[in-house]
Length: 278
Length: 272
Image 1: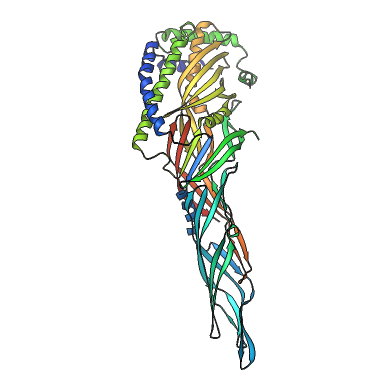
Image 2: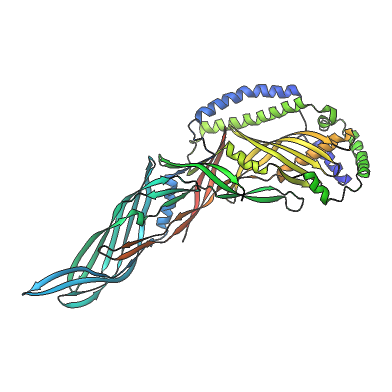
């Protein structure tokens, strides 16, 4: 070390105050004055915070309204949330007719078509008793390609098709030792209301059908992030002197005693965490 | 790791220690005269070292900080909105903070090319309104073979940077215990003081304590596909979507044995 720098340090040392130590009586007085005040404040705060969650290394609480904000962004991002490819359906509709004892068949086939429809709403409506109730609404209108025969005459048409679904979906929460809260849809059959307005050579066909869909096919498990990372890079001091003051070490998070609770419109995730070396 | 050994292998300044000590001794004695009335140097120089005084002073300072924090927290609890009134709330236990802080145990760093420090342990205590870390460490001056064992009390302050939540350590109490080898006793304290002053810059060198949370996050919406073969043949599919979102810090409250962090959603964007 250079003598000059020692001089500067001494100068600073002499002018600093962090090393000054008050007389023992002064310290004792501060302690004696502070302790009853601190005890009193602690008592007030402890009473007010008694109901706060505790018992795990990490507890996160996510409001259903926050999840709805995220889901709302998904539903509002585009009007083309759901894509439908129509495959040949032969026949879609068929009727046997007879005129003067001569039988014939009127029929309509769906040939092809694609359609993008809007996920209008997907939101949690209630979170209670570890069950999440959500409302799912989808709606869309488009054209498909169809062909058919009416009174023996063949024709191609592009009828309008309309879909609508508005159903309640129920999710259960799953505890997992991971960084996500997994919401599993409860299997349930929902009805996709389908209406096709076909006019083939003056023949109006009122096609209406409620197509059963299984919620577990339609909705995949929803993964709510807990904001907990699965790994972490800790900065630690660089062991050898150099230009870098810090080095970084990676640790994996090991979760244990994880649980999820859904109550009072809040999703609560709890876990104990340990840091494992790679 | 032996932090003495590492530097000795890399520096060439120890080639003639006795001559260096002689010159340094002259300097120290000169400045010792100049500053002999100064209150700073005295408590740490050999015979004047009063452990009880240091301990009481340390306790009083901790008490003052705790009292100030508890006052602020009590005001917040009385006048603010309810705890947990946020999009996302996090409760970190004191145990978890100590698990994160213990990653720094037994690590060695450098204040400058001749002064290393070794963190023996960090223990964090959460009180109502304040978080205090006590660092047991040793600082070593390689040029003069002076070792200062320290207990350092730090206030933990919490913040977010680039979505990462971390705590920085700000020392407010330093309780040194000088040990020297090969030095005359009157110089021990001076060098100890210098080492201690150097340690006042330690907050710049101490790494922040990272928390295992990331507030720049993603919300995945999984793809789905349904085949309908009843009445109307069709394949229904929804594409996978990824929502990127970040959280804005609303408040950090420190309670006994737990740290509470309230966050609100911001910057939500869809990525397909």
